Image (cartoon, rainbow, N blue to C red; front, side, top):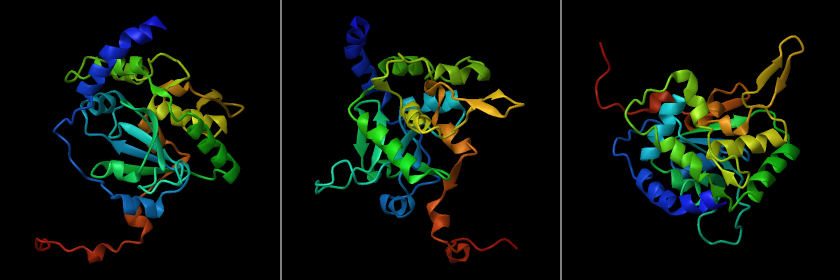
Length: 247
């Protein structure tokens, strides 16, 4: 459409501006690629706290640490490549839906969220959906919506913030990181945060995928949080402290 073409050039300039490092990034849950590779499994969702300007807008609107989400598909994207395997699929603001190596998230705070009890058949369907979306573009209209909230503490009531994250164009060929992953799980009827349709019948309905945010995978009762340090049976007594214990 003409509006998409009109947004293309200023959209690229805007993306270049808002993807600059914010300069105020603090680490607290960083794992290198080898640590993540030891425990991450197909269909695990990796939440990332980005260090870009746009990350601040997403974290503000979602009232969360996490500003980005990617999903692990394994080494199936380019198996003949001699470079580091691209095992994650994400919707990147600059590149659209792409496959990337785990090392892309080096130095960033991350969290692994695992769908519990997902069958091998449904895992395959989720991964197939993500693979088919490789090459799709990122939703530029969503970027423009988000940048309006880069101002310090914009006057947006909390109850409206979640809706603002899901404006976008609604074009199925365009993606937002968490909404694309939500669509993949919805294809196999795996719950994230389903809406209650009838309390008496205990029935649920699927929520609009554009309203999902990275935090939803963290707080979902259907995803477990996997921490590499704990998975390796780490002994806290092995930590070497520089200061003496308190008396």
